[in-house]
Amino acid sequence: MARTEPTATATVEPADAVAAKDDLAGLEAGLDALETVQSGRTPFSKTFREKIFPPLTAVVLVILLWQGLVSFGVVDDPTKLPPPSAVWDEVQTAWLKGELLGYIWTSVSRGLLGFFFALLIGTPLGLLVARVKFVRAAIGPVLSGLQSLPSVAWVPPAVLWLGLDNSMMYAVILLGAVPSIANGLVSGVDQVPPLFLRAGRTLGATGVRGLWHVVLPAALPGYLAGLKQGWAFSWRSLMAAEIIANSPDLGVGLGQLLENGRTASSMPMVFLAILLILIVGIVIDLLIFSPLERRVLRGRGLLVRS
Image (cartoon, rainbow, N blue to C red; front, side):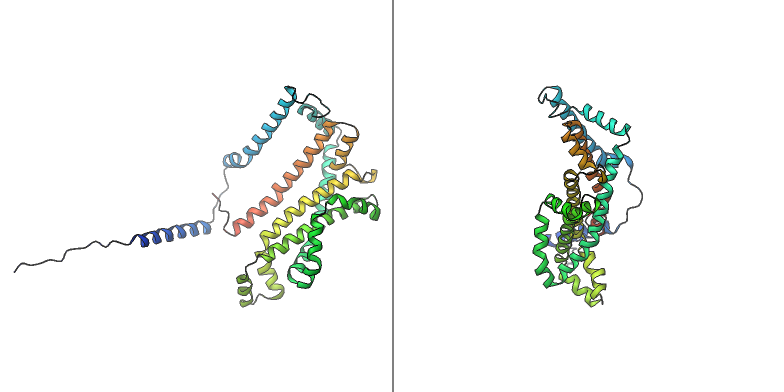
């Protein structure tokens, strides 16, 4: 009788199982990437190529376009569009007189100090509105209305209330920035997943502990967005106050420099003030808010160093 030997049969996995394994492997690789701590500094060449060179290129293109409009006679009236060289001469003149840094410091010191006060007021106010229903019903619409009110509208009453001094400047900054900071925190608290709150209560994080360890960390992205918007409002409020309010006791900030250029019909001075206001806003964002935003996103696994 013929002997029969068992034949080996190949096991073929279904396509769905293979796809599921591939998805699982990709998920594990992604989680490993999130948990991996990158060590070492980013090479300067890469930083220059990705973060410094693009804005420099944009600035150079703008200056070339600006010079082209003047050189080719597209705008041939220097009282409307001065050449870049005229603005540079204005920069050199202000620097040689020792006034350039004074213009910048006068406005930046006011803006940062006023924003700090707005932070101290807007944060607890936002928490109160977010956590107490009666306060939200009473104050919430008012905060939204104040946020939409142009900050320049506060300058005349602030001058009448407080006079022409720095307290008037700080009052205008507070009225412009506090609603944005408070509303940003309210929005962040509203977006906290209920599961986080239940988990916190289960672990004993209730009351102030739950607020500090659960609510605030979870609401941080919305709060940070409110801070950025609050700084923008405070900076614009300050510029409006410096343009309108004029007194020797206030010194000369960037807004007053802009108004002085208009009064003297000096377009180079006007452009100098505009450029300085723009540069200060960009520098504050790059030095303060962008690092905070990257840190928050990286802490949540939304931004992985490459």
